[in-house]
Length: 432
Image (tube, rainbow, N blue to C red):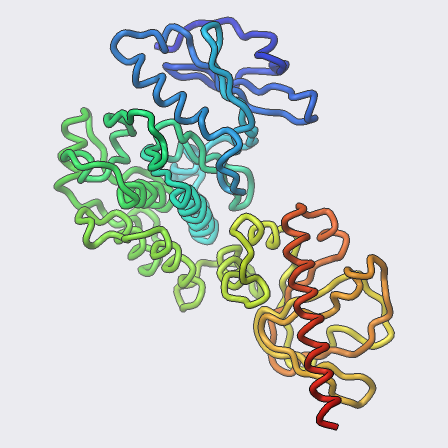
């Protein structure tokens, strides 16, 4: 039973606004960080639970595991931990506040997302967990209650308290995780791996699609037996719009035999990205590209080679993507503009008057001088699509307000582009 503890007025330097929720081991409060001018969520541990003779070691280990991540795991789809305090009188973790609650409510039929949103959410979870795994972490407690929902398809994976770390010298507690989301091999005594996390996320995807859990039981023993021995009903039985392609991904993620399950987050994410390319594409607005498609495109474009994952997600936030038919004028000579462009697919002709100067292809940028000059400049050429194209547009002002790392990466790419174009021009002059 959760302890009855009066809401504190302050926790450390933070002013408490209200309680967000509580469990057996602690309470979470919304608080004001006046120094950084932001609201934060603070997980305050119940002191008595950390001292508990039976489970105190487990609770303390989980708390310290999560606290140790403060300032280390920075990803747009992982809850950021800003600070952690471990003291005899009070122990708490200060983290990013995500308004919108968890995914739990969206695992019910009356609140079910459309397939488009579900696939996007799971893809972002996959990318977040792949990033965490590169940092040596296996989550071990993935469930809808540990995935925070912002809006649209934006989520944040939370609660790495049970995480297994390859680089930590802290003793790991084995008996953690929520029974419904435990992979069959965990139940039968194996150690947690990336594939057990993949199974758990497959369970989350199933529940978002079906609006219910795949297994239901009156006790833990019955639930464990079903997980190990029974195949769940396909989610399409409960939601008729679930396509065969989506269902195949859930089935592979939840395969009881790890030899048939996705071997990596990359393999899981690849199949999710490929959903957008076939006839079974999740419904979306005509002409729009999903975040999954855009992110997958960015990873293949030469311009963004060397951009870390966090900066790629930042690029998506500041860019607008549009499709154009062949023969469309994108930039007109003499006009002024404050945006630059990157060609995601297709080719573009560069004309000055009636003279063809160049033909740009996938991954090339154009219009970048307005950003480099830090002011609007007359366009020096007319650019029109030679084929059907997908074009990324970024306003100079939006890039100027991006993170330092993101701006630095763009500046480097622009300079490389200028050098390449100067070399090409010199070679052409030498020939003539």
